[in-house]
Image (cartoon, rainbow, N blue to C red; front, side, top):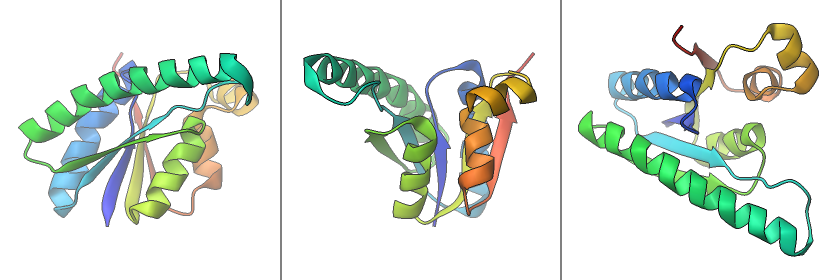
Amino acid sequence: MSVVLGYDESPGATRALSAAIEVAAAFGEPLVLVYGAGAPGGVGEEYKSHAEALQEIGRKALAHAVEASDEAGVPSTVEIIDAKPAQALLQAADKHNARVIVVGNWGESPIKGAMLGSTPHKLLHLSTRPVLCVPAED
């Protein structure tokens, strides 16, 4: 089993990283650090450029999360998945047999999250695994 974390360096994700490391350490399980790099569109040179840029952003973000995980003594794996964040987390959770999916929430209202489809909102409705939503600090 594992603990899967969606990480993008947003305030919610930064706090969720601490929670995910704590959960992984408590259960003695590896931490799977996931970045959903699904670019808008789907074909052509513009899509390729967007996808490459998102993957580079993901690599940099996840490098910081790996550092924090290493400092805490929690083994980690990195997954940059060509999918929107919620779908990427669901794929990684299945692949790594996740005990829980941890995701940050940066403070949008529940109505806005439901209308626009925030990642935490989507996960709470689509995941068959437990989802831990960690609020950003005030």
